[in-house]
Image 1 (spheres, rainbow, N blue to C red):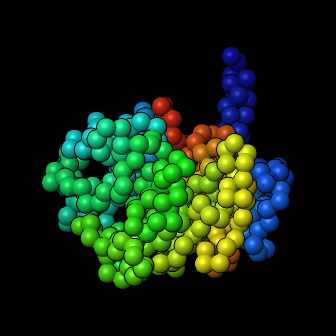
Image 2 (cartoon, helix red, strand yellow):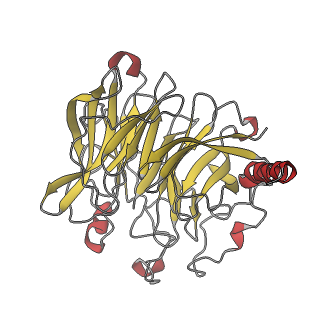
Length: 400
């Protein structure tokens, strides 16, 4: 290739990279809903105005060689812990160097949607070296369930010791679907754990059963007991915070100090919620989604007394994953925007809010891969996990 053509090719490549992240000019709200007979409960509950965003983004591979990465959290020194669904925990250096698997992780059931899932650290990591992780735990036969473990990470980041399972979802089920599994520490030190309802027709009804952990937000102490301040739900387990959820694959603490969650719907009906103590969020009695077969769920009702409405929902589904509020310095115009990973939509979604009301939506990197997790680093950059057998950890910054 001539030097002139080489320069032209490089310029074209750089331009494509710079504009790859810009919000698509196409109005994604034009896609028809799965059920045209359903109506939102209030204005702005779905299909928020498309944000007129001409920002150019730069996307770099921060770490490669990951196999179906699922969760990540940054350590105080700027390095990261990243989970891989097959059951491996990795340390990723501040320079992107990928470690060998960290030893000490318990056996996981990696069939279907199972495996080693989320990971988190508390504010006192520097002094304790303690981490928490969620996983699909084998329970005998073909059954399994969501579990949470904790352990001490060695100073050289190669091994976990004193590993203990502190939470076990009950009942176990013979299913490889819907484990939930996001872990979020609240400002008061309590640990929120999200669970799924295992997808199948029989267990999904247990989302409404407060004597089980299926389809719930759980709030426990770092040691695993029910946290003080949990709601007294009549006949319910003391660790339950809220119920009536489907598959909570996203959770974060907002600028308001409260828990926000993203709930993966069926065909349509992905939900944004801000779960409050003791409240019922409706699944599978009410939903803005339909069965994958195309049939209505529970006659297609979307509202019922005593059940909460989502703050926002998507129809068609974008297959939401995890989320985080942006509070860094690199994107000053994005302060307090909610950043959401999309699996089926293969994009990074940004929502603007006024309090709890969604006022706008933008999407970036369409078709770049299944974004399983999204986080904001101490450097203000946005980090993404691409869920694939040849998965990657990406670093997103404003294009220069």
